[in-house]
Amino acid sequence: MTAPLLRMVGMSVELSAGMTQVDIVCDVDLELNRGERLGIVGESGSGKSMTALAVMGLLPQRMRVRGELMFDGRNLADLPEAEFCRYRGRRIAMIFQEPMTALNPVKSIGAQIAEGRRLHFGETRADAEKKARSLLDRVGLPAPRFNLDLYPHQLSGGQRQRVMIAMAIACEPDLLIADEPTTALDVTVQAQILDLLDDLIEDTGTALMLITHDLGVVSEMTDRIAVMYAGRVIETGRTDDVFARMAHPYARGLFAASPHGAALAPRQTGGRPRLNAIPGIVPDPFARPAHCSFAERCAFVQPDCRRAIPPLDLIDTDSNVEHRAACFHPRERMVAP
Image (cartoon, rainbow, N blue to C red; front, side, top):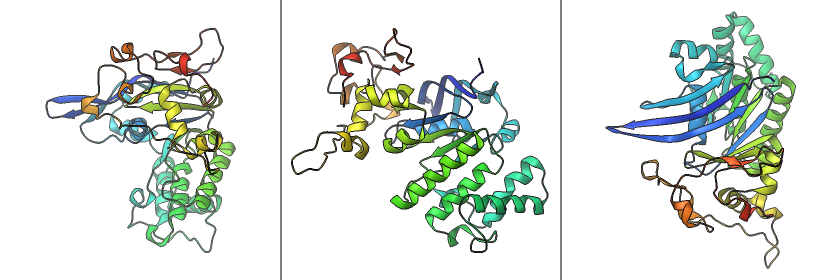
């Protein structure tokens, strides 16, 4: 059996604040195979982006990774920065959430796309710029309208996002992380960017880790899904299985609060689907309880939910479906949303 490309075992991200240490991300166990697409969803503050930054080795100061973060047989958590740089950009690349802040405003887009080729492959400036030109064509920014000498401020939001994608795929990485790649873009441009990503991944066989709030995007773009809450993975499995069963009440709450879920729900009076908000907020990392973090917001909470943190266990041990949920009573809520 082929080993997974990316494997997290008990992976945590620890923040040191003075004399206090707290886990922003807690005991994440995830796998991503070559060519596979994994969606990570959850509210803001659930730990999605921190998980991605841990994989990229770009955590803020005072944060460190504990546990195993294996990439192609190497534990990234143990790598010195100089060696990590050989992976970052070359074998693991990231499309950041806001291209205007991720792109360098004083460098041309051609220089920024070519930089990775020159660094990792030792290409000449001419060869790297030739590749950059072909990449811009590939992401829908053709010459002569979009030449290499343009600067980020001369492009629209959707065009800057296409430049970010070109930078990310320049070195043909094994893993592409996309952190909310369509944030702040209008609906038409969102669809174009997602179609572009879909085509590029299909052509190259690159593994994808897609971080998003949009369950509709996840349902169309991914093979498997991981739902995160308060720094933990609380449900995971094949995308179709999770959408069909939604064993954890938080996953069901996300579905009911999204336009994608409301579109499938029974119509309310007046013919419009109703969005149902999840009451309360994600607990502060410094004040997380020593039991189920969702208990205070859960409409189905029971006494044992306030005694311990539920493990991420298989939903049905008699089935071949690899569907797990961190809930003490998942079966009671396994009904169609």
